Amino acid sequence: MTERTSYGTATVRVSYAVQPPDASGFEVVQEAKVKMSQLPQAGHQIRVSYDPDKHDKLDVRTPPGQESGSVTTPTVEIPWVHDASRIAG
Image (cartoon, rainbow, N blue to C red):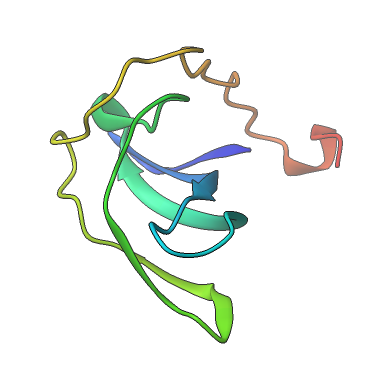
């Protein structure tokens, strides 16, 4: 999901595949407000911190634009629709 919130920024839904060095991996989905020029891309690798008892309490520690890894699938922007009632949900 991508929703423009103002010129140059968007609120996006991001899926994080977290792989702790000493535990089983897990996935967390969160919404994030980002600059359009720095949309998250599938394949980016970042550092996060999280509560081991509540995986949904995840904080991204890598500053925007400093991700590592190879993009596997570029993010595609959804066309902006002014009439919110026309958005399928």
